[in-house]
Picture (cartoon, rainbow, N blue to C red):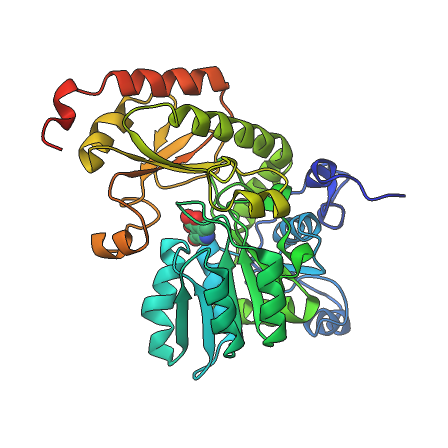
Length: 399
Ligand code: PLP
């Protein structure tokens, strides 16, 4: 039988082994440990000879279903999960890097990831090289000098810059590096980095996978060998996904295709509208032909994603007046939820950075990140329009 399409798999994949009592839904198994009367069976499960669960920090049936579903959606051989997206990133890097190693990445990764690169890895005597995002030649040059890990995120947070995964995976492989892609913004609906040559794909499941802003989680998918090593690091270090969170993420993932399709449609319409607004100085969305990464995005993504950002005249003052006037948007740090979410990057993705660091990354203080929800597009556009109209007339008098 031919493989089902991704929307069908988002609903059905990965659940069978975790069902019990004829229930059609995966239960939340709130048990820290799993008991055995047969000492030999217990031993066999403990050493991995037989399938089963021993202790919740290692594995759990609800968590296992989440891992099986994301593994299927990313077309991977194996997957493991984490308490948050940052735990997925830090545990993966902790597994792969040792003192004296070298990692190449881009300047525009998510703020937390950037902090790992600039604050924590150097303390472990790991050489970190951050290239200008989108400068493929510069990345190629650095990778060719030799590195253990090439770490990418595309589209980036918050300026949605695009990196060519196929091209970078090729150069990474040639250098013997493990190529990692944070696929949080794209989602497996729009982009599958493993199929483009990457070795590992990371998600903050907190965002689109869950989709309802009510559960934290993270995942890593890839080969059995790499994922086994990362799982081992995580089971010992303890950044385990909670079963209740796994349940919420699983439930959210069933509607992933529907939600993401609508979010992409809404994001494109909002981006096009923002281009017509006087006080909007720049709109960043890979679906716009004017976006520098548009053609690569068209090549490697099925749709352009639900995230965009825009810069307004008047900087922080305008942001202060504009955002509170939106009726259909949460002003919050999250993204990828069914509700539209807005926030200035200085308060959200890049709050850990100084204004100077943000400026160096091309993030002006008046940049607004917009995560399109699944609302009716007419309402989102009307909402933005009324908010722009309510801005005080004298706002730009001194700017
Ligand atoms: N990766 C990206 C692209 C993100 O946007 C985020 C969070 O915003 C993370 C990773 C970290 O995820 P979490 O907040 O689940 O730790």
